[in-house]
Amino acid sequence: MIPTSFEYVRAKNLSDAFKLLGKHAKVIAGGHSLLPLLRFRLAQPDTLIDIGQLPQLKGIKKAGGGMKIGAATTYRELLESKELKALYPLIAEVTEHIGDLQVRNAGTIGGGLAHADPAADMPPVMLVLDAAFLLQSKAGKRTVSARKFFKGPFTTALKPNELLTEIQLPAPPKRTGMAYASFEQAASGYALAGAAALIAVANGMITRAELAFTGLADTPFLAPAAAKLVGTAGDELISQVAAAAVAGVEANDDIHANPVYRAHLATVAARRALTTALGRAR
Amino acid sequence: MKRPITLNVNGVARTTEVEPRALLAHVLRDQLDLTGTHIGCDTSQCGACTVHLDGRAVKSCTVLAVQAEGRAITTIEGLTPKGGLHPLQRAFWEKHGLQCGFCTPGMIMTAADLLAHNPKPSEAEIRHALEGNLCRCTGYQNIVAAIQTAAAGR
Image 1 (cartoon, rainbow over the protein chains, first blue to last red):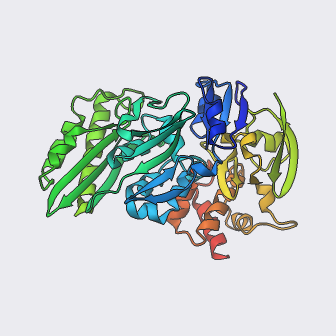
Image 2 (cartoon, chains in turn blue, orange; image 1 turned 45 degrees about the vertical axis):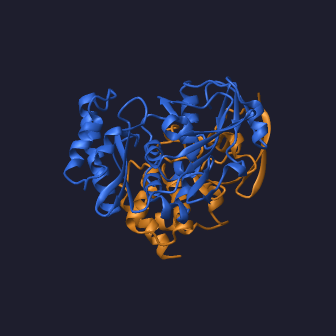
């Protein structure tokens, strides 16, 4: 039993959900981020609005050269999409290691992103892919770049009356390699530090380089230092760029890793992710 | 406030009264007397409470009973054919895949989801699938062997 009581409403459609949204309501889909918060009284909403079974929030479809993912699509459903894996192998690779089999069966991509755990694996992937999030409310809809979505620990650009309804992925550039490397806290599986990288190559030269971190600071973030790789062949510069990307970042401090150790792990993760991404791009 | 809900459990419609904050694991055990579903950690770590929701293994300590309304729930009791054993249950018996048995229902429900979608998993795939199920007795070796045996017998 969850310690404090609340009302539960299963939304029949999106406008039904919009009507109930507000300061004292929480949205539930898979519930695998929210129920642990409720259990520890870290959240005490008056009402839960269940959007987990709404068909209009489920599914993966091609759009232009990219793809669109309904926010209530489960991690399991992401893994079962051959098309998603073919275009964005990094999403499949990272999803395979989120939670465990049962958690992936219940948890949803939109739920995880809206929850915005500062050590979650998916946000840095969204940052390097330059994804956009469709936010809807009774008043209308707006699109927010993933790069402007994560504001702080468990804090996003979502307003209390808005729902994250869709993840929009642009077409990846040609000859692109993507990779993710992380050091997990053994019991929780969350990243002590993790890095996602995307590198595009043409004629042996890097034409685009993106690097993003998770677990390192109070929110996942894109590291501008990766741009130094553009116009180079990469190899020798990667270690330098990895170190530069972490330098000056105020690293998290907790019982699992102090800031110096965590920054070191992030540097190693960045180096590995960039090296693997470059190898895959070639 | 309690409200009546109807849960489709093991193919049978069961009506009971629950508060929205009631967890599926507790309702299955305490109100529907389906005590085959065990509760180990109550924090979605150990997997002892694993049941199937619409054919997929989930941890019933992290699902509200009201969330499961209108969906198909299968517990370990529902996996067992009348008067016999499910191939996974027989394989766990034959391969000594349990000692105290507390984690076994969850192990079997997770393995059943795995085999339903990947009938011939590799050893590595079996171990990866069991990541969310903890066993403090066996060292997992015989659990993996049991799942391999069940897969081979299909």
